Image (cartoon, rainbow, N blue to C red; front, side, top):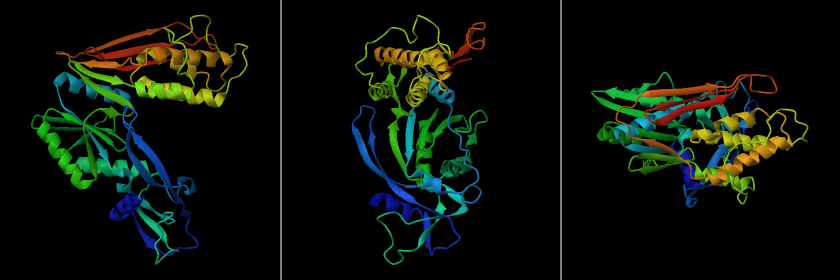
Length: 373
């Protein structure tokens, strides 16, 4: 807590000012978290001061809140290019990232619990920079990082606002941004080192070395490329749904009967069903084999029944048996794009719509796929 508080003071996050009766005062609290490695061991203990963003009033304490997030397809394309060309993959973590985002609105917050100023205990914090859980915190941080990258001669990709490209004098670098995590790769290792040195001057950066764990995905180097695995995520999901000891099955979809909206079975717990389906959707990052069934089960989130829940548990049993199935990105001498698509004809028994599916390969690496009604 002291480390976090001192970092806030060094960063000039707020100024202590006397309270005003007409101001909207936002509260704050401490949140504690255990950061773990990909194998489940403890990495570090972390305390974070977060604002009670639900106290904010629209058009007064904040205006725009949207911030872009890196697209999964972009991640797979860049990783595939890095593997094919033998480029290094470096990972950076920005310490206290949101604290660098500058606020354009005038916002007042109460002093942190346990760290009130002894000389001015009744003063409030007039914030100059964003805190975690502020409605506009993500947006403010993204614009701060984007401004820095553009000042370094890096251009923002049109296809994905979280992808930045540096192309100068035969030096090609790619920057993937997901909130406060950065993945850097490119043709010139010395240019990567210079960029890391430059960004370390501007922000407090933790160099995590070679890419090994990103967005809950374990990145394992192999002699021919990279394995992208979500086995830890699947294991945690099985434990959460009490399916760790379930019997394995060989297919993700039940082979008897069809999934329809109204099948006469009793209703299921909608809250639990939505939570599990939402977690399964995240597995689409590396598991294209479950894309169809996850899309199918997502169509019943508004009114799940017992049969839908049984189909969901069948999928979880399939994942238990294929927990170590991974997406393997390999090197290819002449990478070219290949696309495969298919569709049924009025296959949905509820509304007689069709289901389409496609998968796109860069060389032999799948980079984009989808299955939808």
